[in-house]
Every structure is written in C-alpha cells, then in structure tokens.
Image 1 (tube, rainbow, N blue to C red):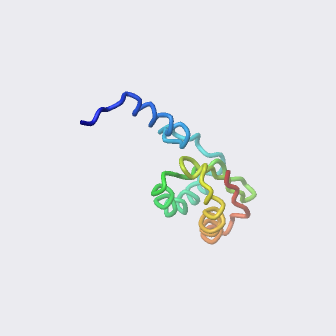
Image 2: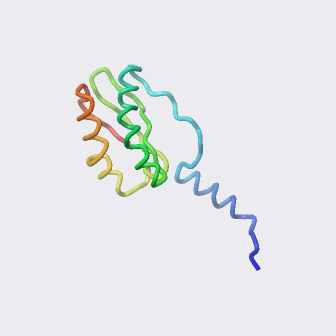
Image 3: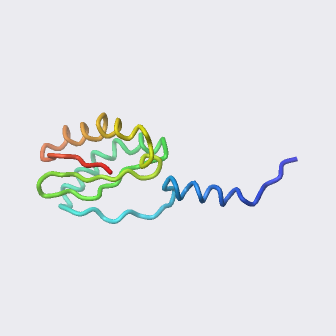
Length: 107
C-alpha cells in the first residue's frame, strides 16, 4: 500500500524556490528594442537546450556601446557547467550572429 504524505507539495515548492521554478515574468530588458529583438532571435535557438535541463536565460539589458547583459535562471543559475555554456555556446552564437556586439556579460 502506498501512502501519500502531505509534505510532497511543500517539498516541490521548496525546490521551485531554490531552482527558480516560479513562473514570474522577468522585468523587460533595458535598451534598444530592435537590438533586444535581435538578441532574442539568437537566444531562441539556445533556449531549448537550456530548458531541457530546467533553465533559461533572460536579457537584462543591451547597451548602446554593444554590451549584452544576460541572466541565467532556473537550474542554469546554479549549474557548475554555466561557465562552459557561456564560453562555448552563448558568447560565440551572439557575437558571430550580431556584429555590433562588443561584449556578453552573463550573471
């Protein structure tokens, strides 16, 4: 016989708080809407890879001098592989696709 314990949902809620499972919408990014849309277009190719592991990336800002500021959320925010994802996936895809990007800053 299997008995359900009432703490199951509380445990999931705890994990969602830690790993960013909440569904709150991020603040709109700062910067030129055209450039933000261009970065979003590049990120749309990367997002399924991040989502497969329970994470995502949000645009924080795109500055006039070509700096793209991103923020990892969900599992990606705490993943020990994030530096490799930044150097091996995000930075090359963004800088190769958008010639105006001078720097990619991920937090």
